[in-house]
Length: 306
Image (tube, rainbow, N blue to C red; front, side, top):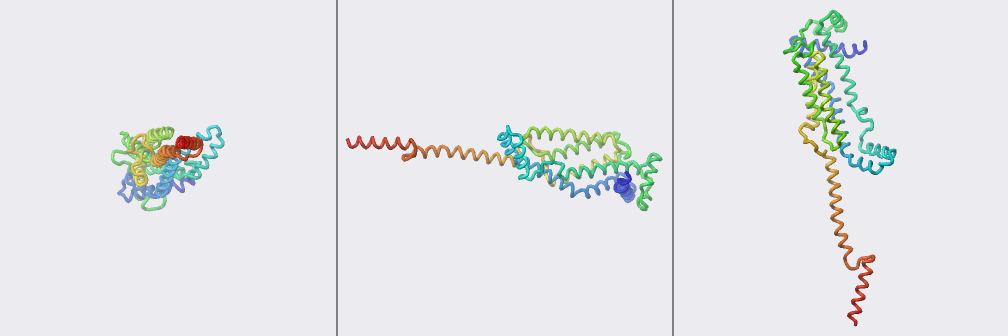
């Protein structure tokens, strides 16, 4: 815990107090400024995470027809099916480890300690008990800008940032932002299992974030809200509106192209079949048809001589 205090709690607490002092002692503006600063620092990781997720989803959609073919071909040989599936994943550049090998895990691992450190920083900065005052004094740097603004007031708009939102406005907004964010990154798919998973995530994640915001200090809820808005902005430049305005049941572009090629191939085969049949019907054709034609020619020649 001492190590985490040293590398996370103390920097976040002191920077938060400095920003609050610079912004006329307004602790709410200090939280907003800190949120923007943290999101800017995490921006490269966020962009990498979103691009990796989009690339993986597109690759999965593009190989789906091939996966269906493999399932039919090796339905009675699970071992061979697994080998061929892994080979297909490798050729498509998809990691079998999924999110464990993506930047998403790293992003989650980094942000969770930040949430915990920010929670403790808010509690200590707005110290309401002697224990909180003691923790504040132990974690303060000897910076003038960090100490000269103490004590700070936690009142911001209708909120007391050390307590949960009494009117439930923040939890509702955080849940709504999370829902929009989930819809933006949800890629259209024809896979029923994937559709069910996407629908579940679009319901569970907003509800979970709203509940967390409802039970924690509203200062942390303010961080969640602004962080979600900034993440949506980044998502827009990578996904556009994504699945937010996508029609239900829309076929992914990669899969549609693949299916279109397959349909054209079938049509070409069907179109070529009558032509081949006609070619075989011409005089001089090989096989049994050619033998019958020669017999007919001989009979005609005999009748003419007679």
